[in-house]
Image (cartoon, rainbow, N blue to C red; front, side, top):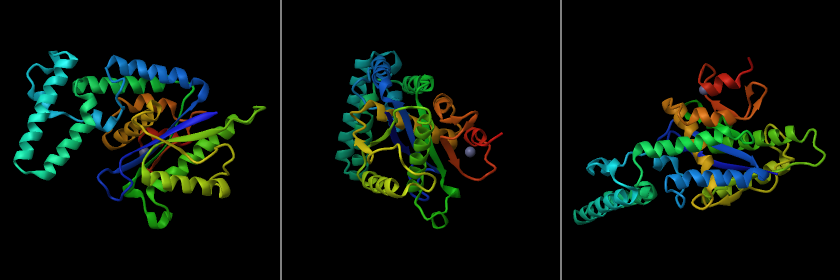
Length: 299
Ligand SMILES: [Zn+2]
């Protein structure tokens, strides 16, 4: 049995505030689950993040208050935490007093999302993500599936699907093809299941789509080896689904900003047929020469 952890990066809205929308699925065989989980936990422990969720978007922000605290990087973790919390409390009190309600609400929300990471400098947070990406890259048993949509080239009227529906159909089809290919020689069938980061709007949509795929197939394939509708879990509590967040984030940052630090690790796991990447696609114009498009073409 294979589990495929799914998460997204960027917004599917057109135009939205990102040029790309990425849906990524990281598949691992269940017999590697315990080891994989333990390895991630060890890295988290080293950065004192064992209780924290890996959320790439929040981890990679610049926390300006860290720069305002003298010698921040020389303080130990608890001193850093104390200093940042003190700064944040004062800041929130001042905003409240000045009646800037919207700014107060937004700042409070930002602080909440980043509270698990404030004891780490920017450089340490990036190193943490890099270690996670490197370990995923080394997992010979893992496979990465992803649809990366460049929304400038997406015409919903012509395609008759929304960005996120197309992405989900692609992930399902490629994961199914992968399961089909490993089932060719086996005596007993191996099945796959999608595990998705919980999000109410996505949950309903993907469940309905999956039911349709079970009866009618996708545009590309019958669905025989993927079972059930996706299971939805809380990413705060389930470490492995956080890895899908790292993969989706790394793909989007590579395509939008040419950042390769995380991408080069996780892209090693893209499902391949021989030398050709079949698991990850960049939906854009045909002249794109990014690493995904070049390795997607048959040479
Ligand atoms: Zn490309």
